[in-house]
Image 1 (cartoon, chains in turn purple, brown):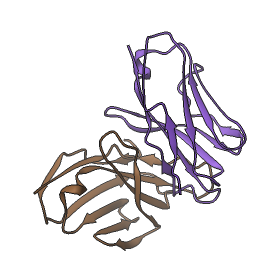
Image 2 (image 1 turned 90 degrees about the vertical axis):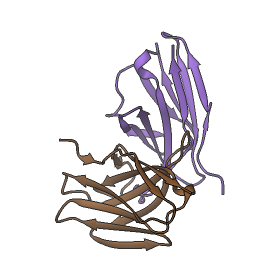
Image 3 (image 1 turned 180 degrees about the vertical axis):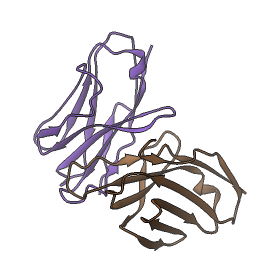
Length: 114
Length: 113
């Protein structure tokens, strides 16, 4: 079956602009996760959705970051007023409700803020 | 001390060698231990997961967990050039949805033919 898809694959934006990153999880996976992978920093958890609700937003690095999920499927991560330190690969993963140890990742969106 | 430590390498081996990749951790609550493989400019791909202590084998790959030492390993037998990638260990304390995985920084492996 189809895996996790993300778009765009690459995004170059100017400092101060807003960007939207999209994730389409595996069909039937109700849990959706966003991570950020920065050079030399490893994967950093950002936010988790169960269905359309986000009970855990603790990983969002600032109030410029927000995310939503509609219809229990597609999720959008929005970064407002982008800064150069936001440059990273943004990864989305999905899992079944009781299998969070089996998270399946998409290919990521490589964000470059100039 | 970070929760999960992983030597970044790089690790270079000839084709056919046995590769040992390792992680240490500090949180004794971790019960699920995963290994992901990440090719350049791709997302992480789940290779194996292990619950609690013990060994798990899948083809050329063997995962070992020693909870008493807070040490996990991934062994790759008969390594191939296609195994060249970054290997990430990941851990979690629960299986319920919403449990964020805690990752090591990854070890870069290069297998030469």
